[in-house]
Amino acid sequence: MFKLNPQDPTAVMPLAKCLLNLSGFRQDTPQHRRAIFLNLFVFITVVFIPKTCFPYPDTETLIRSLGELIFFANVCMGFYCLTLQQSHYRELLDNIETFVNAVYRSEYSPQQEKLITVNRKIQKLSAMLCYYVALSAVIFWLVPCLMTYRSLYIAAATPNGSDTSAHFYQILDATFYWLDNRQSVVGYVIYSVIIVLALYFASYNYVAKLCTIFSSIKYCSILLQLVGLGIAKLDDIPTETTEREMKKIVQMHNIALRCATLVERMVNPVMALQFALSLLTWSLVLLYTVLVGFDVNVLNGCFIMCNMTMEMYGYCFLGTELATTGANIARQSYQFQWEQHSPAVQRMVQMVMVRSQKPFQITAGGLITVNVEQFAKAVRTSYSVLILLKDLI
Image 1: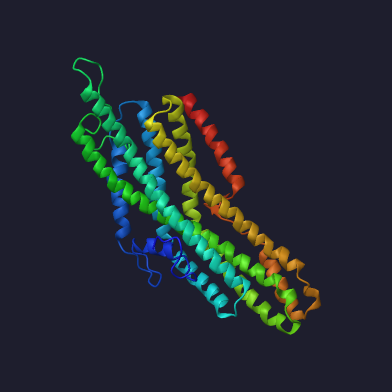
Image 2: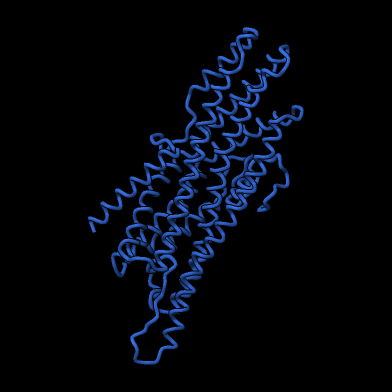
């Protein structure tokens, strides 16, 4: 499943579907198994309740903990919001498979070659993303544990009577119920083992959400590119076959439009959550860095912020690519010498032109367009929030 090269280069998003299958998703049935609720249970009991219902030793620790909570809430609740849109995703997969089957049924063409190339690229990037998330989780857990072990070793090697004491670096900073994980070795070890469970589920949620959304948006862009390739080659085919090819293009364009609509509906709530929580995460992590300075805890916080930034920019980049590709369809239709063909062909070209006038875009809550320009605005807004929080504290 995690191979860099797909077993079947014609398969549609095999890795994303395999990851979702672990939570009970099935393309051929509307029912969703209860495995997803185990993810929610782990998040609530291991992360949410300890971070919201138990006290903190100081303000800096509270700020860091809130940043971690918001990041893990984005991971878990974002994936849960995505699973609630399973009907849209199921319909999206059906439409994509209808489109690609129509491409593969015809004789070998540049569309087939491009589709196979993109499938391989999506598989490779998705597998690399899985490896990256797994490695990130290991580093996130291992570094505080090693620093704590080093601190304990130095404290044990120091002669009695000195002021040297062990410092327990928290993986996720929280008072875990009534367990003394801040000053007790046994409590710290137990808490660290429990955090492994939380990181395991969070890593799965994170990579499943990213692979599903990234590959879905990318596939919509590819479908539109294939429609553009079909329009571009109309001038090179015999006139008597133009009407037949144009009918295929209209059908493929309709499917691509439907896929873009389904992707927008599927990721709309996830993007709204992403924008809101990204701003808070950036602001809180930067505020903690300003107040405390650079240490191991700040390193983990920066790790969280970098992952959030990568995710946010990925959505915005793919959203921009989708909008640009959709706009190119209208331009390619205008460049086609449609006035030299029959009235039937002219009507079909006009239909594609009109439908391409509607902007293809991903939105957050139907209000904010997800693109690179909006990403830059979000970064500037987070800086403003940071200044406000710093003045309040």
